[in-house]
Image 1 (cartoon, one colour):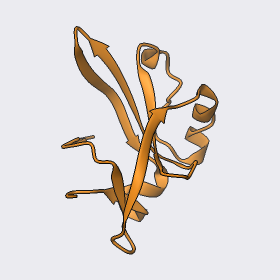
Image 2 (cartoon, rainbow, N blue to C red):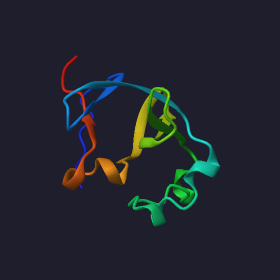
Image 3 (cartoon, rainbow, N blue to C red):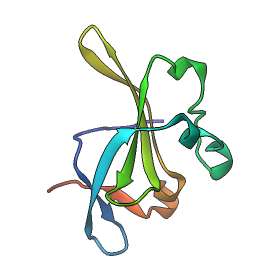
Image 4 (cartoon, rainbow, N blue to C red):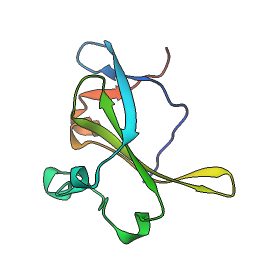
Length: 103
């Protein structure tokens, strides 16, 4: 799997319309990570290897649906992304929202 995080933008783009949608990042609650695999998410976000990380969720502003997750840790002053995943509804084959390439 290959992932490229070229920049963090405060928005996503609605694929069907091209409309820019504002987003928010916040720390995910452990209850929100339950049963994600059954909902189509690929990774186990409760894996013990992520205990060292802060896990953040990306959501549309004023919406509680998780659009993506990022597990990151700080090591000697540098931030390392250990895991990143788009929500199943944003996977390439049926993408509802995509990253903004320009603002």
